[in-house]
Image 1 (cartoon, rainbow, N blue to C red):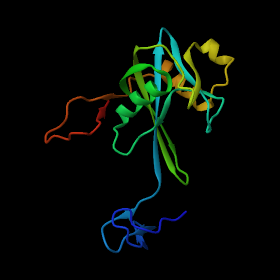
Image 2: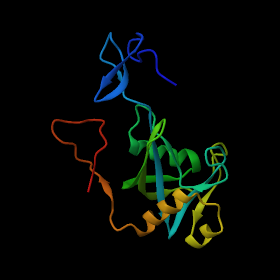
Image 3: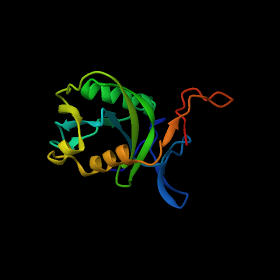
Length: 186
């Protein structure tokens, strides 16, 4: 589907070549439609050598066991998103430690997925019975007999066998202040 009207001012868009790519742009203001993107986040939470997994109750992925996660909201930082998603999907409170993996999926809606290593804080896994219908901490042996999504199997390997801590949350904002930014560093 092509975008026809400016999301800033409502004027009819035209097609212009910008950076050697035909893009929809507004002749009345500075708006350029750069494309369709979504940003997903996922949590890798270990407790006593077991990984938190949830079973998807809806498509995409209905019936598969995955790590908890979801999509960011427009005005929500990614680190707040993953804390919220884990709490909503399975009632676990966890704290972000760092970014440990990225997935890039160029397609009609280009998806970037950010996997966070998280520290378990509290709670028992209880599914929300909307997005997920089961939740729990599982060992690698238990996962062998489960319908774990292939990407989640890869993420579990990253969580358990990764060689670095990944990109760590940097709580010190640079001067001048960049309030609202989420910064991560090696």
